Length: 283
Image (tube, rainbow, N blue to C red; front, side, top):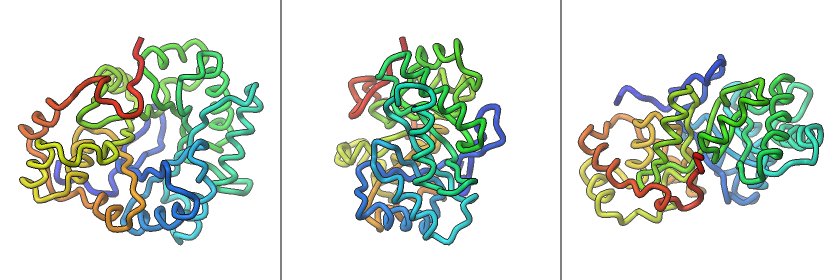
């Protein structure tokens, strides 16, 4: 595993698009700091930024991409739609607004557009997916997927989706909330699994098992958590606005967590009870 590098990517199902295996999250990164945080991340080697309409910082992510001096094609940007517009066309227009905030112009696009949550109900899920499919057909989204979806939600999509399976399912994932049923379902269907809150918002920084492993590998607890995700074949999306931590969280290569230690971390799983945001409903 130690031959992993920050440049590694995974292929999305039924697609030629490749997603960087390490992403940078910007949830609760305020407009005033988001541009600089994204620039710090890009300077540290990240090539994947994850935002959302709900985060209210899509414009700042787009500004950072432009300011970085990197070619647009080298940066993978994800965003998400949380609530419906009221029709497929209106939801589609909401998505176009996001694309324009991130990458304005006739040829502007995002690399991945997700439905943020299944919680609005089945008709809302359908409306948002059909809007995303239109965006995908037009090339304004290079890939489309879902977030917080359980196996049942993804199965339900078969009744109306032209694009199935979704390219990605982004769910809460860390040692205390491993969502094994949802992960196994996604792996079976080739859906790339993204891990949000991989650092458990630092709530577990003093966990004795985690601390002892961090000492063993001479790494921070955050580095162990990110490396764990990478070795599980998940795409972790660590978030920080601290430039030093941003850099440190990208420095997760050149070491391996041994199989027995991976197993020890696996044993920390608390199922749905371990979620700090939302465990998916697989029914």
